[in-house]
Length: 168
Image (cartoon, rainbow, N blue to C red; front, side, top):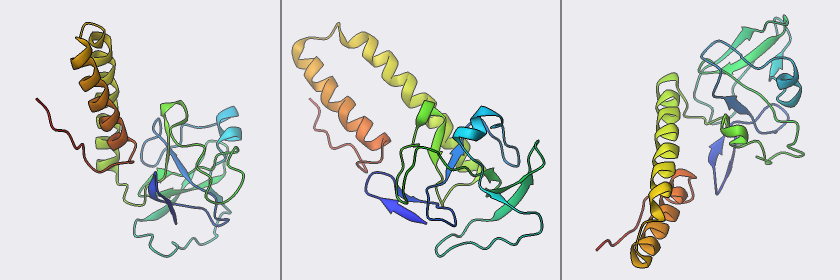
């Protein structure tokens, strides 16, 4: 397990490299094959090889069989992957690639993962709607909107815990 100021704690593989989850997967099922699996290599294990969680990893590790016959490690049911563009331990360049890849959160469960995806969709849609009407705002309201939007995006990105705003 590792952490960063921007992302908090996240899971790492045996080699210390960051692990990711794919939002198009479902618990127990990998939907990343072919070229996807070249860019996002599955965290794999040899058949019969035991896996042990690292320090601080409280969720359940498991193994699924992939369509190609290999075995992939899961965390609370979710398949885990590396990102080929991460060059060294601690790199998190795969975070939010295509809005479908996320660093593997050690607190993830099928329930809170789905809540996260739903919240992400709602947040993105809300920002789209608000941005479309922002051109109609007075300069004063536009400045206030921009400040609120920046604070809101900082919370979503994990850069802030709450929005500090004194509205009028």
